[in-house]
Image: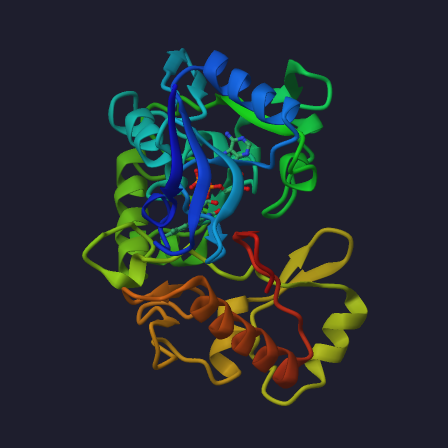
Length: 347
Ligand SMILES: Cc1cc2nc3c(=O)[nH]c(=O)nc-3n(C[C@H](O)[C@H](O)[C@H](O)COP(=O)(O)OP(=O)(O)OC[C@H]3O[C@@H](n4cnc5c(N)ncnc54)[C@H](O)[C@@H]3O)c2cc1C
């Protein structure tokens, strides 16, 4: 277990901003993870669990407690049952299941930055797939009960970019994630997303070679600055900064009375709700690609990513985020909600 004091956190995040950790602990085994959590909890010390730092906005004052960096390793495949340690790099996990084993189930989640252990936290998803569809169990340390627990898929409380782990942020530290993948003789799961289907030249619902699906997703993501590239400031982001708003029937009706909403994207969501597109709202509210003249701007490739052009502080980024949130509210009466986790700051 490596322990550092007053350790910079910005380099450990994909936004590359924010202040230092009072104490940074790097744990390489589950036992080290649990020991570090127990020690912090016993001392009444604030604890921040850190994976790849790709969904975090850390305030400029940093974190006044222990930041626990999960660096555990483990990839065990038995038939189509996969168990990975929380510290494994997610994009590598996906690549291995596709390249080495020809398995389907997570191929459309290629190129998403961060750790495997964080994927259940916000039910990571892209291009018509989300981890809730393939996770069977999550093994976690329960800080309240002080024991290791195994939660079934149903017990994880997954919904759109949400889970029990996000709902109870101070309770669970994910140690291992178990998936059930699919052996479709080298074919993918059905292509669900219209953009991917168009790119692949197939009808939605068709299957393609799993490696072809993986490559297509990486290409599409790269074109939007959604694959990490240290040389490209459009990828110095936390991915999508706002979730797609899910509107109740009444909210949706009121939204559609606003001028210019005739062609707003609309997708059915649970409980009679409608999901619309945050990127569309931002663009139509007047914040186009590259918007912002300062050290924090919208990505030049995607309106949904707020980026650090090199010298941005957390306050620079949040000022831009607030301007966009307020502009969308004024134009469309819709409240945008941040997707990344805020540490010591509020939108
Ligand atoms: C360029 C880019 C593209 C992205 N594209 C997508 C996308 O397509 N779809 C999508 O869903 N997301 C996307 N994201 C967001 C991000 O990659 C995911 O949310 C990812 O799962 C975060 O993983 P992480 O390890 O970096 O988590 P971190 O940023 O380190 O942490 C995020 C949250 O999870 C908690 N956490 C981390 N590890 C654990 C653990 N082991 N146990 C308990 N809690 C933990 C942290 O405390 C924090 O609250 C993108 C981000 C970037 C930068």
